[in-house]
Length: 282
Image 1 (cartoon, helix red, strand yellow):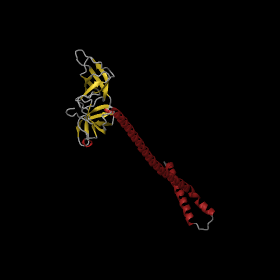
Image 2 (cartoon, helix red, strand yellow; image 1 turned 180 degrees about the vertical axis):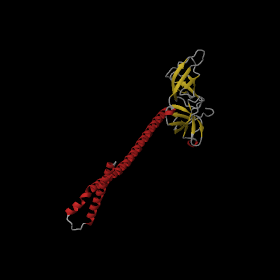
Image 3 (cartoon, rainbow, N blue to C red; image 1 turned 90 degrees about the horizontal axis):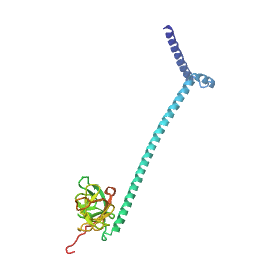
Image 4 (cartoon, rainbow, N blue to C red; image 1 turned 60 degrees about the horizontal axis):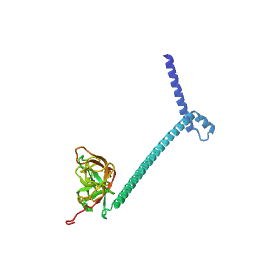
């Protein structure tokens, strides 16, 4: 116990002497006359030299730390801005690519339309702006209406393929009933065998060709086109290809399914052809 107290007192005395010697050295540095030799000044400053070095080293380290901190923060901001610029540039490239693909598809569709030769008509080009989500109704909304002279029963095509017909018209938009709508009826014929029938929708991805006699030779992969009967749809517009043609015992007609020529979910625009109006006496 006594040894411990003695050691504590000894350490306390040493600390007091050290502080006193540093204080004396600082006092002498301040109080020494101007003419005192450099050697005397150096001798007086000797006790505080380690403390000066430590303070100088610490100051340099702190300065260097903050310098690196500010430099790192600046670099981080520059990196973030660069990443934002790259992201924006990528978005611009994707947008331009999307526009190019859309224009290419529109040009291809128009070329096919002109090959079809719809009695010299100029089509109204419209963008698809909506899809009907009701299960038993298949339609699209387009950005062309009465202002663009669109009328009910005008024919909607994509290139040389039938999409449907206009069913509702407003001032700036219209609704087109698709060939997959269960309520639609389209006079048609099998291109290769010339048998006639009626295409109707099934609310699914395919259509049915009904009223084709069971004696007909229609088969898988045969093409179905509009027949021109009825005065709404011009003749020879491609509707789709037969995927199934079956004879059923006891039935008078073949069970025929066909796949539409165009998947509407993969196109962005359509062309509208004016309805064929038959005058009295024609």
